[in-house]
Image 1 (cartoon, rainbow, N blue to C red):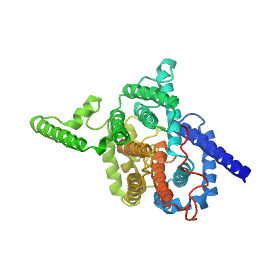
Image 2: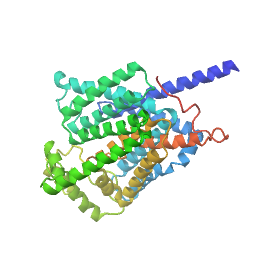
Image 3: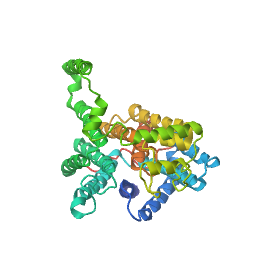
Image 4: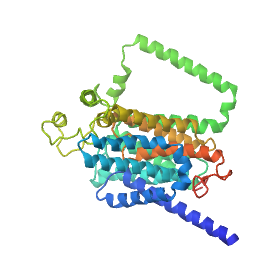
Length: 430
């Protein structure tokens, strides 16, 4: 009996370590594109697809409570009946479905602390390479090892978030927390170098969320009445001061912030792109044109070709509307946009309502992921994009929160189908 239990525990430990390594490798490959990355990406994707099918009976309770995640990919695939790029629609739709399957594998096989470690190691590597890029001749100071400064800014925000979560989580060892101090400093330096307004504001907001939701509750200060009195006094003073300032000064706060980062009122041409998108949506409002149906620069009569010429882009370059909602409305129609927003609302609601109250740092982490995802969705077009790292972290947060509800309801104790085949409360490295 003891030998059987020992063998089972060893098998669980091996499976956990294997999946943790594979997920870390997946984060590494999707964190930044590089040449021949598909040689790693596709075998990993096939493994996770097989793991999803293998564990389907055990994770079905979670799937039954989150089936809404598959509605948007289903609509994406249905657009093959009216879209022009049939092959691209099928390929990208299946990739998005596979992305969601990977989220289930991560949410049911790993803990939040496992994700912290994977992200910390991956983003720290690219942070170091970005720091060294101008000295090695592989990049500039502003964009580091990435293709643009905005991309590097977002990557370093992820490093900043992972570092803070590891730093404030008492479940990690002292050595790992010291490493987090160093990587947090590296993230601040690289965000400063990127000179990205979005990255800077997100880093400040993440620091505030981690402090208010991750540190303040553990200090016991929330149980003291004077804290709430002081908070109300400070908020009232700030409200009065801001009211006086904006009524007595002719300052446009939006343009002032944009000007501080060298941006103009059009957000570097983004508002012009949004006007083009609006006109296209008016032509095919409900169904859209299907994935890849708009960006056809090689067709010199298309609207996309005109946009490429206006923005001085080469025909082979990848371009977008730099707004996820416009991008989705153009390609999947307003119906697809509704399904996308429904998925976003479900995920955020799960993280806020069904969060694991026994692990506040995990809740803080996924709330910060929500903030980064929503902020980026306003200026970039990768919300719910296939194989995108932020998409996986975002959806995994909602699934992990739902998983905690299943565990708290004691499905396994009642003899129902278990969520996974091993202990989901594993604390990871400590």
